[in-house]
Length: 461
Image (tube, rainbow, N blue to C red):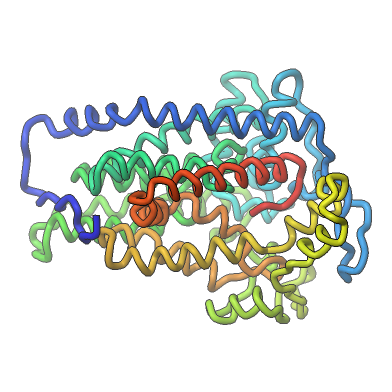
């Protein structure tokens, strides 16, 4: 399990039997266990979200601008352009509604109204997912949020199957199974059931690299094209694809053609989106240019960590087109001391004030980012080369564009599609069965806590 190519990459010229049929037969072998993991994840996250939404208190406070006192602030004020979504009817109110918060409102807005110049920030959200939501709503008559929830749930099942098949091709079945368990119990994995792109992107990313691993480059580039239309990180899949292509075809450029020409297909996703934005009276590159609306600024990784650990000031763009110096607050452990001061009373631990402070503390951001970087470093020696190529750039890019709101904003969510991180963690922990089970149980507990936080409009990632 420590070789850089545990299962050797087959040369492109090797053919043995009906390749595609054999490959898909192998995928089907992973369905039963993946379905079991998916079902357990579904039951846990849906049950916790239902109970929280039915009996819990939706966030009702927030710190004022000076961060000195709490003021009334409804959770739904955090929706896209503070547009409060109408409540869903019947079962959807309890099952879907807790999972449509935060970015889910952005995708719902795009699905219903498209990209418009009066809503320029929508350009930061890639189109495939909201297009599918809109199409599904038109066909079924269901609200766009419900369609998004269905897409996410089904895509997560597909993602677990493809991840298991991919990892089993490079390692063995136990490693593959533990990897999808690790993904499913990760504390922020509830996003796979939310109206977010995490499930769809993971499915497309795993399919892209599985197909490339099997030398099915047409399927690989089509899946990558769709991944690019799903999230900006899709274009970064070109790096592990390039590694696999060179491993399979060698360095003789003559052996690359004509197959290498398929490589023009994935970048077309950016062109399609850019042209669609222009047709909607937005800028071709607004998918990148509108990131300023989340107070992002340019920094080195060292400065990013300095800001999150010690605090700093950062020059960010203001809505009027100018700039101002924003105060970047460091990671906070104040909530721990406050919990102790209140003698860990249940009434305080469940209060909106305490849960808000936990969500704003950035502790999870820092821990997840540091652990991910350590796993990447170890994986350079223990994982196939394309695994490292898969993870390094998507981890570094956010460190170059931190936000003054939270320097490591959304990192606990960004790591979810980076399968090699979970593979590396499993390789390190798997031989220690008791430790593996204990960590899985602890992670599942945090998954339930974070699911509850998200369902009630507290910030998670």
